Image (cartoon, rainbow, N blue to C red; front, side, top):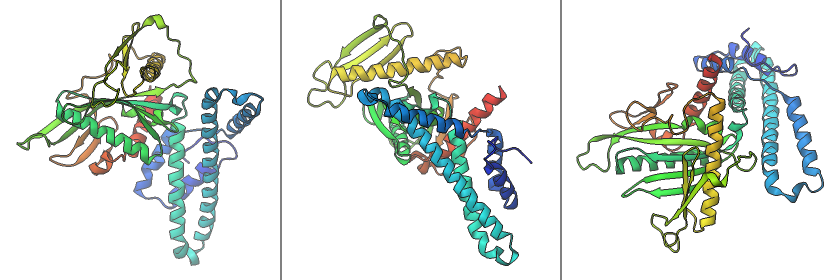
Length: 391
């Protein structure tokens, strides 16, 4: 029998599932089986429960709550482990339901009556196992962090800036559908429509791990609403995704290595916003990394946000070194033009969204632009996992 999941002795879910899928095999489930075989994850309940006990003792210790900021990553870990425990309990319950329906279905006299319930139980277990597989693919520490997402339009003026705004809407919709909290850290409006740049903070379980595959050049092909002749245009925008390191990872930054510039914020403005030097730009001289923030009225708040983004960029830079990538964060970005895109969104002459790395396609372009990205994200995680195993 094909090994699906290397589980502990008390875990019979994978073996049972494989037998049941063979009993009820259809083409749509063959890819599911292949992905489980490719994945090969490990359930480790003992370590999880032990860590939960340690966290409970830590939270119950005298003075533990004197510094809430210090406890934030601990509470996040506790929530993640509890969710993991609940997911496993649900898998066990679904497995037990499946076995009961299987036993009933083996009775020829009641087969026709129990088959619909058997199939429903199989579908529920399959969906839960797919979600469990996804969470295991995101088991690395950096994957579990919140994300900072940046969007910049390519060449093309208003057309490209409008495309950048469409991507912003897409990611905000995706965050909302997944119950993630999205906060706008920086925004620079376009000249006529769209935007020149935007920086988002997206908070939720495994936000960075889910979104890191969105990093790259996104291409749009459509009839331009800004062209009176109704010609087809191609637009590009770059998406960058960083792990939000917060306060739980210490990044040493020497103040002497920083050049801090203040200037008046641009945009629609209003009271105070673009009447004082409240916007902040920080240049990290050793790396050449430049970050800025102009969203808040307070220069101090903008500086704190810019420093937060700088720490995330420096942390990602260190991750790249650990992965033995030679190029720096800016050198390894492709030019925002033809031939470098990771995904193409075609609205004319046909309608299709295609990921050029995994080959994943979806003809429902409107659904994708409204935030239905889960299939693309999951296939990219499996693709990256396969690439690592092949290396």
